[in-house]
Image (cartoon, rainbow, N blue to C red; front, top):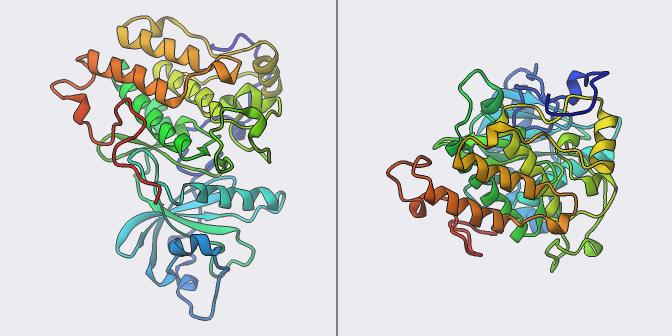
Length: 367
């Protein structure tokens, strides 16, 4: 077991990762809603929904163009459906009205829109949004995203298929780091990075999704100075949450780097980070720098050793000592190009969507 904490009690299912996780916030179970359950009301001319503020008016949903096909799943703050929008297959996320914490559900919707203006091959694209849902008064909002498939990195890691090879871990790790570099350069901190929130899109591309816990740093901030960042309600997954956030300190982009380390560790080991008592784990992470065990699986190959070094540098206790996403990319670039087994017969400099070690990722936009 990777955690040295004595297992006296096991986590209830709702606090443990599940193979069924899809783009919603966890925990996720297969939705029992019937396909098209709010399709007819969506097209009713008598029903209106609140409008988005003017700065987001460009992405308002044209409900006449929505066709719901089937439910994909539901989670704590939302339900996701496969749908079509203006003839294109999309994922439609309806944010639930949370009776226990209405503020948290509204925050989740508006946090999702932190990615509304971002365009990157390793980030799930937001296509349209609405501050409500026709026929459902009180619903915090609806979001239409690109359909990147229904398979998550979590399912790929813990499914019945073969384990990820070290070369594949390097490639996937690079995709996620590329997406983080883009987000951080745009002032967005994800705050819930984990395999369940990384989709495997056609072409074997990783795309970061589910921005329901994200924050946008104030204009002009780079997130490196913890005295200049903002505080508000934090959600996320405790097994991947940086120790400074557990201590209640301000948010910086380095919190995502910690979560990235745990995510890469999962890809390599195919184990869960912790299985002990939740409060005991949280205390040990903060007070005793508990981390998942770096075992022999990281030392068998050159790529494994490189990943082990990256993981250990990314989850050090002090956020200022962790590398940036750009520095991770530089290290993975060197490994990606020097290991011939990663992409046999291919020039990694021509890999679509992969940024070189510069400050300008390719094929990206903030418009």
